[in-house]
Length: 381
Ligand code: GLN
Image (cartoon, rainbow, N blue to C red):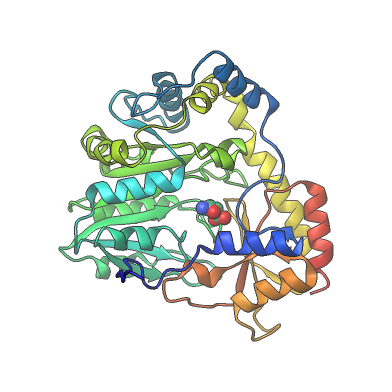
């Protein structure tokens, strides 16, 4: 064996892969990894198939098909009143995770500090470390998981290069409020701090609340990479198509990396999505669609012994089992999968220190009958 020095010695296989594999092996209902168990719109697959038949099968331009970048720009302006130039400020990526990785590798130098809020999507910290960056994580406290801005201020040094935000937040389902935006603006305003804003759940905001995209606020927008996912938008997570928005000077650096990481993203998906996106009704109904699922799932689980945490956005519902058992959340998630047939994600997987507040995350992007069956089983726990 040739010896190698691991660049990520503490990192194992992502919890999403582990729990989805266990669910498949045990034939459990899979509420772990975040993806729908229903198909995307037939009209969308039709448009993609048509693009293939029409011969859109060679490389797309490095930054993405112009027709798609234009539609993304139109959508962003409609939603957030912000104009992004499709030529210089929009790049199509192979999903949200690639966009995040690319943005980090474009701007993070060795020893640069990056602030993240944990529990956090599990790709942030390893990606920062691979760039030689230093992860400065701030642990948020359940049940509210609000960002303690006074502590953020104290974490900032002259090495702070970036803050990563994620609203709606995975896994906690919290969203940034206007007060958060004001605090954030006050902190970054006088500094050269960049923002990576993971907005893949932008349409999944409930109870009539607003999504505070970084695109809306000039002081934030000028320093932000915004990453978005068509997988989440169109119930097609397997397509791995998303995009990044950033001001031209940041996007120029982003594309330098993107061109050597993926070069370009598959053409027929882009052509099909560009056509489909012309009709804004394809996303206008998403908050209601998922809010019904959230409400249905919460109502069912309210009869269980779990304590429901609030869910203002995303397609994840967290529950606490504090007081029910002392088991570690990873052990309990595995046991519930094996013994009761429902897979979830233990929230400790989203902390670099593995902090365990005895909380599990369930994905409710599922058909009603799946949710009903899962609830029936979870009531027995
Ligand atoms: N974002 C999804 C989740 O949190 C999964 C993404 C992935 O598996 N890479 O479940």
